[in-house]
Every structure is written in C-alpha cells, then in structure tokens.
Image 1 (cartoon, helix red, strand yellow):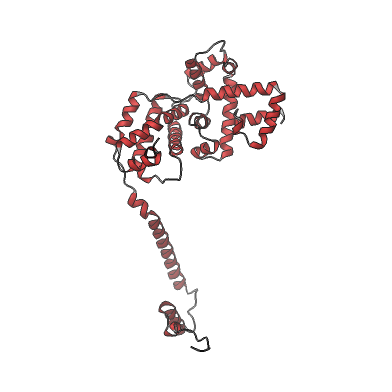
Image 2: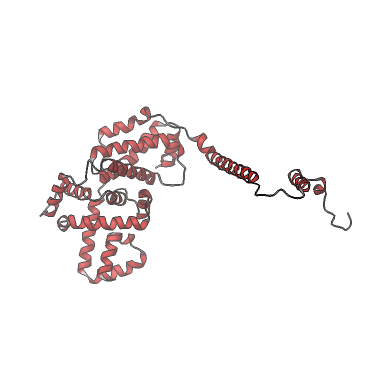
Length: 148
Length: 187
C-alpha cells in the first residue's frame, strides 16, 4: 500500500482497522510497520475518532419529564385492523382500476366499430357459455379405451 | 437482562398502551437519540424538541412495528436524522450553523497549546462538527455518536453506502484540518 492509497483509505474507513476491507488490512499492517509517518497519521485519526465518540450524557430533567408525560398527553393510534387489511384493499383498488380501464376501452372499441363482430356469432356465444359454465360433454370422463 | 426487557417485547407492551414499558424504552434509547440530534443540529433546545417528537411517534405508532424487519435503534436514528434535516431545511435561511460561537471556538482550536480540559475538548469538537454541512454532520452523528455501521448510516440517511462513505471522507478531512492543533496535544 502506498501513502496516497493509505490516506484515501484512512479517510474512507477511519482509524479502526476492523472497519477496513479485509483485503487491505495486510497492506495497512505492512505500511504501518515501515512508516512512522503513517503511524502518526493513524494516531491523529484515532484521536479524532475518540473525540467524536463521546458517550451520551444523562437526559436533562426537563426533557425527562416531557418524555414521561407522552403516554398521558398523546393518544395512541390503533393500526391492527388497517394493517391486516391494507394489502387486500390495495389489491382491490388495483383490480377495480383495471376493470374500469378495460370497460372504458371495450366501450370505445365497440363504438368505433374497429373490432368486427364474429361471423359465426351464435357459435361464439355458445362457446363462451360453455367456457363459463361448462358443458355436459366436458364433464364426461374421457374414453381411454381398455377394460373398465 | 431478561427476555421480557428486550426492545421487541417492550414495543409489544407499548402497542397495548403500557406506559411503564414506554418509559423503560425511552430511558434506554433517549440519551443516544439526544446525542445524535445535538450533533446533527448543533443546538441543545431544538435537539430536545426533536427527541420528544421521536418518542411521541414511537408511542403513537408502536402498533405498526414489525418484529425482525429492523433494529429499533436504527429506526429511531433514522427518524431522528430525518426530523433534524427537515428542521434544518426549514430554518436554513434563518440559522446557519456557521454562527459566531462556532467560528470563535474553531479559532480557539487552531491555537490550542498544552493541556486541554475534557470539557474544553468537547466544546471544540462540537464547534468543529457544527461547521460541517448538515448531511456530513448527520453522517458523523450516526457513525460516531450512534455507533452505526456505514451501511446502517446509509439506511438512516436514505443514501447509498458509497455516498455515505463520501460524506464521512469529507467530514473527517475537514475535522482533521480544523482540529489539527487539538489532535497534536492529544494525551
């Protein structure tokens, strides 16, 4: 690791070698072993980080009282019912949106005459009815031959 | 510590309106949330308002908490930083972090000689951080004050890990320059 790379990584990952990518740690150790300047830079960064890591102080009394008063002052919101049904409602909204869009498109296409009526209209209606409710023929088990 | 005292168990109790559980959870997390808010805002009174707002949301929305999706501390720090950055956005024209006190303290940090008391050191560091841009302050607060990893800080800041690393690089570079004299006399 050269000094320029060390400087970049020191700023990027800080002075704690555990925060460095493990592939760079060996190079870091070698550089620190041979360079007093690198060791000094690492020490300065470590001092900076120690200064930034000050432990939190106890809460001021006024803030403690304000936090203690929250359950009395603010009503809770109940989310259980809404959360349980939220995905279903979202799907319902999406479905209704699609249905509405398809309906509008169908009316538009029909009114424009762009989509021709089928020549064998009766046969098509009968086929659609079969699809919807099934025909007695469709319920019959297929004849596979052989002994029953 | 008993299992009944974990954050998740307390949150379930809070969702049922359990005020003592709320106070227990606040006592556990509020000091660090306050430290993050102070460091991000650089202002004690505003930071306390932010902490109150964070815990009001926790109390009101505990019923929406989904166990296993995130650590409570991560959620708290995310909300804290968001509220702080929104607040700074609102008052940016009115209050710049480069106030006279911060400038004076930085000038003092430039000429530190000999021993520096712990309180004075904290003040100088706080003033130097206060001069950073808001997002850099937030990144520093999350990484150093909250003890978050870069990835966790990225989640809280709603940035990529690379962008968060970049914030930390710039913050460290500036702080090292501004606090150079202080760091030289580090015992």
